[in-house]
Image 1 (cartoon, rainbow, N blue to C red):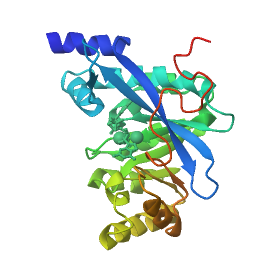
Image 2 (cartoon, helix red, strand yellow):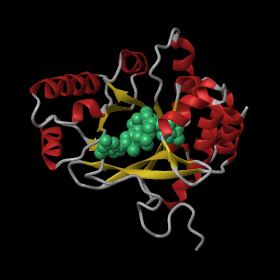
Image 3 (cartoon, rainbow, N blue to C red):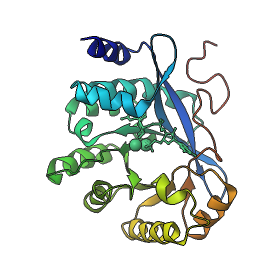
Image 4 (spheres, protein in one colour):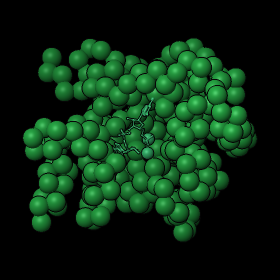
Length: 244
Ligand code: G
Ligand code: G
Ligand code: MN
Ligand code: NA
């Protein structure tokens, strides 16, 4: 049908681009990495909601193919990023269980790669996912759990995978400076994560007061509009799609 045809076009790359959002060390202000985020446009060039596009693709049975296409587009961007920084790509648990995803991820410089597990659905059996992430880690890829605290699944991921990085969900960052309840949950998640040996990245940092509270809680890194917007060229020098 029409919907599948338009999604196939996005998989092929028409109407799909990748932007990078900086991830910043909160103590030094240094950019340590960047998350690759997909951006989609419709036939008339109007932007389409990425979350909706991925949901539609999953419904049509090509969710993993779209994720893999997004990863394939993102990986070369390590070449425009400063030395020593890492590229963070999103992947669902389902995509990580597909060997073709590993074939993509393990080409190039896996030690400059972080994979953010974005699955919100509960994983019935963690053995296969643990084995998949262990294999990636043996090659130097770091594992992050995305949107931590947003749902039960994300905490299950943290428990089972002991990830290198835990990304504190925006829901606990937004208003962390004014809402004691959010601060309490954030503090508990930070304690939980650091006990497991994970580094914390706070998502969605928009205001300086949020930044100070995160620093007080011992959060190492942050991401958000205050620190840098998703951009086609966050590091200057032409960036993705540059022709010179
Ligand atoms: O960038 P934005 O906040 O609009 O993204 C919305 C959602 O879409 C986020 O949850 C993000 O994880 C997801 N998303 C964006 N780009 C990608 C991508 O390239 N791959 C995957 N798997 N998810 C993505
Ligand atoms: O993969 P994940 O769900 O973490 O995707 C992050 C999403 O959050 C991206 O779509 C990005 O556009 C969005 N985002 C990044 N920084 C901010 C921010 O400071 N505020 C808000 N509201 N959204 C942000
Ligand atoms: Mn993410
Ligand atoms: Na996500």
